[in-house]
Image (tube, rainbow, N blue to C red; front, side):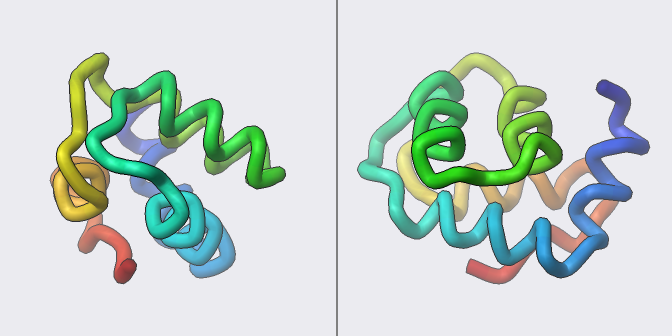
Length: 80
């Protein structure tokens, strides 16, 4: 997946809503695998799962850390 695909995905409002829902329901701290697993369990679309699967392998202390990283790819981020 390229950054362009991530940016395009984050500009679609329904995807933003799905991402925000997954991030709100996570237990923190978490890691990339935990985020992807939670997205699958929540029934998120393949596009949302792909966005989360593109995150770096690291621990995330809170939703803000993930949102800032997603927004740092040139997009404005998402509202959680």
